[in-house]
Length: 277
Length: 326
Image 1 (cartoon, rainbow over the protein chains, first blue to last red):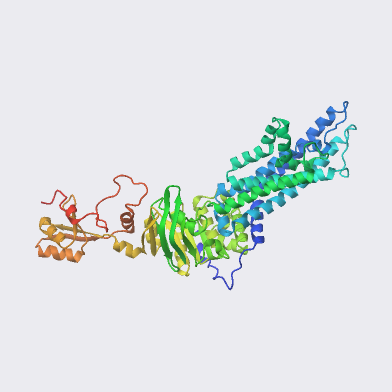
Image 2 (cartoon, helix red, strand yellow; image 1 turned 180 degrees about the vertical axis):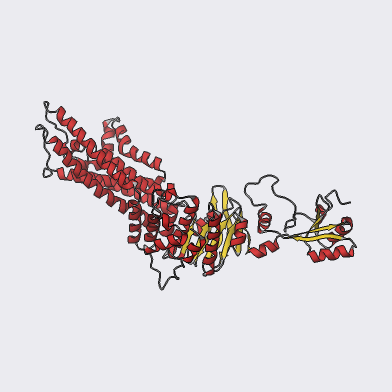
């Protein structure tokens, strides 16, 4: 660290020929490096997996053993097998929030935007990299969850035994991974809009869990249409094997949620461009 | 070349940058001086497109930062040393930036060598001292080997060896023909590092000149010690000088060359015991220039020992003042 050693390294000669401008793929690679090079990312994902699979398994065991001598389980069988999935949604949302807000809390947003002044490109790259990661991990965890819980439940004869080949079962299991990615993107967009980790998580929890709960206390003439179109409620229809009353179909519901997330992302992009970094 | 033209930025009621215009030329280190809160960082953020100006423009080689085709290869900028994720290794931090700028990843190792951080490249940046953080920040600016470099308070937190290192690095970068723009509130540091200085206070331009001219232009004081001050002082005033007396009876003369003062004393037939030129430092020049522009005054901290260049003290007002005269 002495001046002599530092200066003995000659500067690279001035740029030869033309300058190669960075392309969108460069921004994607940079964002992937950022995501994978922070140890909290793999640790958080591993904790999500263990929590979701473990808790779902325990709940499955509790449900099926309670019904051993009683009536048949009639509710959504996949929903029971993966009953801790809401934890996964929550965790992916928080991770998505952190992808954005950690840039602001650490000050890294400065160097990030100096390297890539095209701010929408930065937001898009973050969204793509994180959505793909969340989707892949979400699907893996969802399938592992399904098979583990299924193995636990299969010993109990009265439990309706959902197989992947059954009507809508595969869609529900895949749908949980898709919802995880959408929850993550929602968190990322909220992080971009609010820039604060605490406020973004609060907003995400309010949208996903608290407001739908409050809607339930409203008169049904209000709560039914509200819950039908409320993005996170509509999106969760993809996870249901049987369509519920006052609910959009699985894919319309997913479209509703996706549109909501897209609007949040557009808002985040607008503010990212307009506001001082 | 960096060109700032009528740049204005307002934060609520506060005018952070006020119709600021200047140019930064290649080949020399240009210091950017001003008291804390003068708007140095805001100006740099405007130049770098991190903040949007309310009025005016800031361009780099003729185009705004956001329009640069390969920004990291044209400008390297360090605003805040600790602008990294504390949980990321130094090498990965630089790698992500290199990838974003389409810079080959081998360059990461080169700049780590250049700033002397190779041995700790695998450590989490959160464990770095402020001095190491500054080196990491400087390493990031050099990734694209850019012809323009902008550093905001780069020697903050560096130990004496690090300060010498940073100074040497900046000067060698300038000698290679690059544009080097360095902000500081430490005049003594800029006196050693910079060739040109741009001084701002309360967001507007106070001075844009070379360090030498700034020091020369600052009021230099001549101390005259004579047994007959009452005979010499009126003649000095008549010659256009400004005179104050010190407690020990010496005359502090501004506005006249030492040779002229010597001649005047000679014609007054006054024995001269001491005639010495007290040269102003850049520090004093700066204090003088920014006296009215420091954001937070400590009452009574500014010594009125020397008259300002803007004639804040007329000869009549400053003479006679001391008890030793009359």
